Each structure stands twice: as structure tokens, then as C-alpha cells.
Image 1: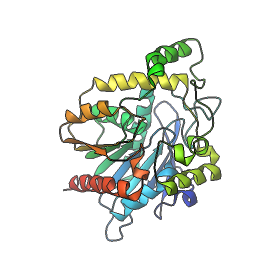
Image 2: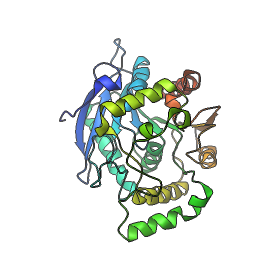
Image 3: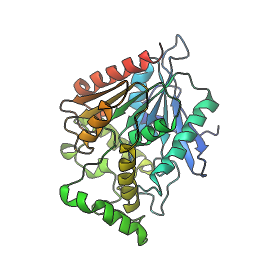
Image 4: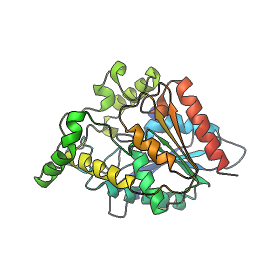
Amino acid sequence: MEQAPFFTKIAEGPQGGQAFWARAEDGVRLRLAHWPSSSSARRGEGTVFIAPGRSGYIERYGHLAKRLGEAGLGTFVIDWRGHGLSDRLTEDPKICHVARFTDYQHDLDAMIQAARDLDLPRPWTLIGNSMGAAIALRGLVRGIELKACAFIGPMWGITLPPPVRSIAGVLSKCARLTGFGERFAPGQGGQPYVIRAPFEENTMTGNAEEFAYWQSQAKAHPELMIGGVSFGWLNESLKECRALAAMPSPEIPCLAFCGEADGDVDKEVIRTRMTNWPNGNYVLVPEGRHDLLSEKPEIREPVIDQILKLMGDSTS
């Protein structure tokens, strides 16, 4: 596979990471990266696929990759279309847009095929973060080959202020029909969230060091960043949440975590899904915000420990 740019200095991940270009079925160019296990005793005990959240990109998961590597697991990450260094989809590269939410399935399929081509160590498991959890859930229903999965703040339902919730679907649909689908939705703009939001007001993490880590990446490589969402993305994401709600849960071991202070996703939708998930468990994390994998150590580490146990059980 062709090598792709990889900003290892800002990622602060394990040694030996490499990035690659891949093509989705519809021709979109995607960037993927693999960090090998830090274990020197063996090739590794498997590979964890990371399905990033909205506005996520490969380098943002360097710290998680190091933690997984220390446990003997490799890490495989993707820049979704419109994110990171993968192809942007609008004239303004700062807009988070997708024509159809199901287009992300082309990216997931390309990721699976790249893992085969690279012969990444098995078993394959997955951590889906926010939007990535929505993409991964549809993929699992479609039958992608994974042994276990963990979801962090899964975007299976979006929390919107009451005045917005009642009109968001209609407004975003009308905007698409009138040719404004690729424009920023109301209240959205081009500035990345980690630059726009002060730490004290951010909804992602209570860990000041991790927030500063994201900010330093944004300043060092602004080309990795995106801003707010388009009317089209908003309309498609609302439709996808409704579609996912009607789908059955797959029969693979699963943990879904949601922070008690997470106001970005619908906790009731998550709880309902996990109540009916065979081999599934829902964990509400006290004091946690939206990105539990980047939270303060006393919040983050118990979550990662539970994920590592789930991944370890999948090898037995």
C-alpha cells in the first residue's frame, strides 16, 4: 500500500507507526494508520480498529494507541471521508459534510480490506467513538468481521436543545432540497471546536492536559482540522439515528460507555439499545463527559481496563 503522511511527533503514539492511502469503493481517497503492539515477546494479541468520532483524525488517538500497545494490542485508525487528510467533500474544507451517512460504510469496508492486505494480527476488535460508533453499528449489522466491540458516547441519538429539536429535521431537509446542503448549519462555523471552546466550557473532557494536547495538534497541523457540520450532515445523521433504532443488535460481545455529564448524545437511546444487546452491557460513568478515552485518569483508566478485559476475552 502507498505510504501516506503521518505526523508522529504530535501523535505521541507507539514507535513503528505507519500511515497508508486507500480507496473507497466510490473512489474517495482515505488515510489509514497502524501502530503495532509494543510487545516484544510476540507479534501481538490482536488489532483494535478505532472508529473516530466526528472531527477526529488519526493522530488524535496516539495516546490511546500507546495504552493499547502496552497491553499487546496493535491499533488501526482511519480518517473518515471529509476528515483529517482523507478527501474533503466540499469546496470549503472546513465543513463537515457527507452526501449520505451510509457513504461512511464505504470507508469502513476499505478499512477492513486494508487490514486484510496488511495481514494485521487477529483477532480484530473495535472501539467506536461517538459518530464512529454509529458507523460501526451499521457495519456490524451488515456483518463485518469483528470479535468484540466497545463504544464510547455512541451517537445513536443526538441531543439537541428543545427549540432546535422540533425543527432540525425539517430545516435541514429543506436546506438540502434548495441547494444549501453543503452550507454550515445554524450556529456552526469553520473554527475547530478545540480552538473555539475554552477548556472550562468544553463538553469533551475534564482533563486539561488532553485538551491542551488536542489544541497543540490543531495549531501544529491545522490541515487535520474541520469545523462545524453542514445542513446535509445534520439531516443525514438524524435519519441514520432513526434507521439504526430499527435495526437489531448483533450477537458479539459489546460494552457501551456514556459519561454521566455527556450532553451530546441521547443516553436513553443508548441504554435501550444495550438492554436488548445479546452479550452487551451499558456502563454509565460518573462525572464523565463525552470523550471518556481522554478523561482524567481516575475516569479514563477504569473504562480502558474494562475494554482491555473485553478484548482479552475475545482471544480466548
